[in-house]
Image 1: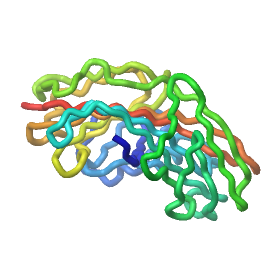
Image 2: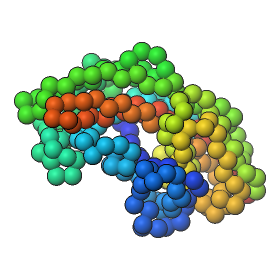
Image 3: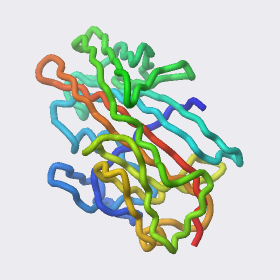
Image 4: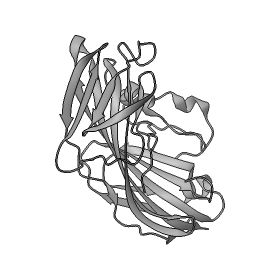
Length: 268
């Protein structure tokens, strides 16, 4: 199943969060791990990640995302993968810069510009996404931006290892999620999504930390964040950035995103 995906970012906090709190938009990884509250219907975005994770000289990003599905969709079992790519580039800075029009290619597949400076892989055309082995190549070619090309190697895919499709989980017990792959220090996001027949999932809670291949969510946190019993998805997302120097001391962030989603049944 091929689908374009939207990338969501936030930075490291130490508890599953589900309460409304508008101040949660203020993030600061550089001050170390900290507790933040994420409104249950709100998702972090790419700007949260770029602004807080690295240098002010980063003027754009090119993302390559691969997702593994072990889910229930419209009553059917789905085991599949999807690959997508998207980008945002400006000549100056991400907030007020001169947006670039031109060509961006990722692993020989061209991204289509849908707004000035914003690009997306469109359609079901094949695109490679190398995680764990091989390299990924990107190219920016335009008259008003320095010709830029580079490569990046991403860590091995992070995949949930101790949960299975349609596994029954009780909110009366702590939930431990283990996974394999990734690398030390890589940021990991664990989200719980409420499944329904209309949308893929509504965020109920998000836990973000540096990679330790395991996280435990307490029974109290599950009960506070999750509403009615039913089908939920556990979504594991890893982020692996590489920074490439261009003219004038500026940088482009080429980032590998790997997702693994499993549908489970959660009850009291």
